[in-house]
Image (cartoon, rainbow, N blue to C red):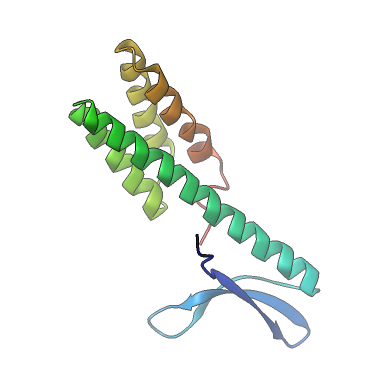
Length: 136
């Protein structure tokens, strides 16, 4: 697994600033805060890496669930889970996404698909976590 660089630490005047590695169309980097010490900036960079990794884990869980649902022929539920996966990837997941997934979990439990229900149920609290969509 390769490590993708998501941000850099740059010294500006007497502050250490965390900036996105990628530049926007105007050539500017997104700022993630400036700090009095390099240690504080490094801690912020670690937070960004944690959130990026957390999102990747959730996307992996969701795409695996979609594949399993499709292989079992439960296409209509797979489509809903796939839409929710796209919302997570776009950073647009919130209460509405969580509600859709709760309905999916209930349907799967009614149909005896407890392992798939548990897999999808794991994602819901992460989506509802206020810090989840505060990432790059």
